[in-house]
Image (cartoon, rainbow, N blue to C red; front, side, top):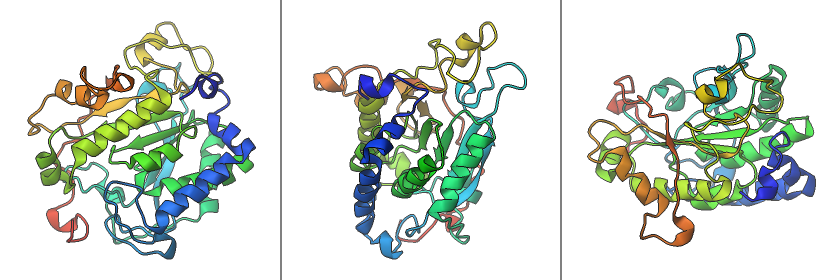
Length: 322
């Protein structure tokens, strides 16, 4: 992200896009992608504007499973590093119909429930953002946003008109289209990709997903290009505007400012993945032999233990063509 977009974290960059009219133009470009859907690497090419569906079984309207203050994210995002009573949580909005089919998914009841619609109007999605802001949440986090990125931006345009001023978090499985991510530049302050696999064969076995590794690496590179690496879990940051002064030592415990732009790459590689974490990110970074603009450290933080056996059975993991 350019220095101009990063200079004032109390004034999220999407507000400038809204003021210039660029946010509305981004809505149009993203919805053009919905006409022959390429929001993720599945490239289904169905017209979701006309409610045609394929892999994610989602049409035009967004599908929201739940929303509310969430205290299970990293402390600096949920505010749990602050003094008692000051933590208001990350304002998470959980989207349904995930574009992966992870056998170990902890949220499968809401992310892979294809029998329950949960369709939400754009006006209602905008109202959810404003409600979370009213409840004092430190940010708005979209969980599993990939296949609804166009719808999120349309609702965001409405929420801005209603007074939304919180920074946005894109909490993703990293199976994102680079083209779609480019349309999100300047909209999301923090990218929170969950890097799931370093082996395409393991990705196919556990998530029924093709070419995950190369797609995720390309997506994380694009996120890194946009916002840089200012989000680093083991590096102390100043307190965020509007959150007050944290207690002594809180910055060191929290790791970063919850409103500071950047990429925080989580790792949730399953035990059967043949490559260790360290073998994944050199590829994501471009490696020492990659082009100069693709070198540098993409931060890997907060390894996630999400490979517990609580996911759906094989018969509950979506359409048979996957």
